[in-house]
Image 1 (spheres, rainbow, N blue to C red):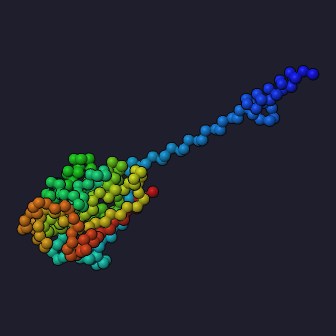
Image 2: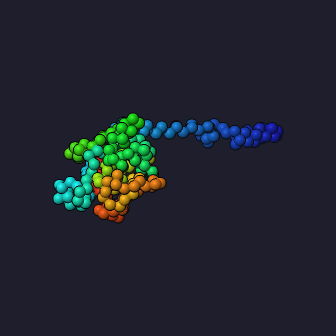
Length: 242
């Protein structure tokens, strides 16, 4: 009997093992898995955001606020009529704690006229929210803050008078998170500051004290009733309107 048919069968089996053969035993190429569905497109960030806010005075020259529990300013001390409340891009605050006062900030700290700050901000495309303390007061009667993606950060400054170069405010508080989304809640803490351009530790006008030479960085004021330095003058809690 010839061995040829047997060899042919063995070779055929080997080919099936290496290359795979059809039939119920498998070996046919499998269908590749379907591609994973594409992730949903991110929801675009709204170009504007509206915040309702609550203003809580801690130190004030307003008799009503004092009657409600705020600590009073020293007798004869008040805020200058002019103020700067500005919305701006991140990194473009008109001043910052630890930085040196710009030319505009020096003029403001010396005179109390915040027009130099609001005009400079407006020329850079910033949003001027209020130019006077009367306008700030009117804003408190309708406590709503409307911001845009172009100007999502807020700074404020208002000079204490009489004083060498002291003012109250906050700097560069932003309402966007690191991913560029609107925050649901933001806290603005107003503090008293020394602009670092005039000497003096008493409540006396700028013109009656010498200039600080060289100028010093803007720093939290450490004098009664703002002691210890960084004591809040007011706290504003803003909640995003849905």
